[in-house]
Amino acid sequence: MKTNTSSSTLYLTCSKTPLEVFIDCLVDKHYESLIIEGQASEEELKEAWNNIYLEYASLMQQNQVNEVFELIKEINTLNAKITLVDTCVRHLSHNYDQQLIDVLNELRLRCNLLQGDNEETAFQKLNGVISRAKKWLVEIQMAEVKLESIQETEKNENPRDYFYDMLMVISKENGYHAKSSEITVYEFCRHINKLNEKFQRELAKNAG
Picture (cartoon, rainbow, N blue to C red):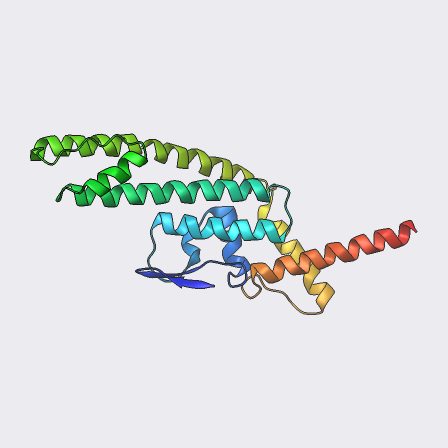
């Protein structure tokens, strides 16, 4: 599936993402490869990549898929909070709104802005809200480090070699040349799972 943001169209799912793009993101962190057209922010690219990687982990039946899911969920939740706070603060810097103040206080950001505050006092109080919200940026960074450490397990000494070796096996098994630029991540995972199933059947047959 592809989606249009305000200024870009990105790859978002394994069924549409070419394996070549996936490898660039996994190995070299070239998340810009996910852009089909237009421009995207670093946050948009990371979110798109995390969702693709989560689907990949699920398709490949990786043991860490649950941990990946929880980390991505945490990152997305924290980013949503930061966006909400930014929207509230920008509005409150121009107009007093008790409902927005209540929202910030529900997030435990201790917004004590008063309708009678002068411009300087209001600025200081809203700055305090922003400072308290910065803790979420630290939490996002910590979650991203954990997520990247899981993704690092995909990297052996020659990380690209695994994918290219598997493409050679897929090519031989199916009688055609499978190219990383033409096969999607979803198709790659299905081929690998079928090869694993075939291998397990042969093992069971030989054992019997």
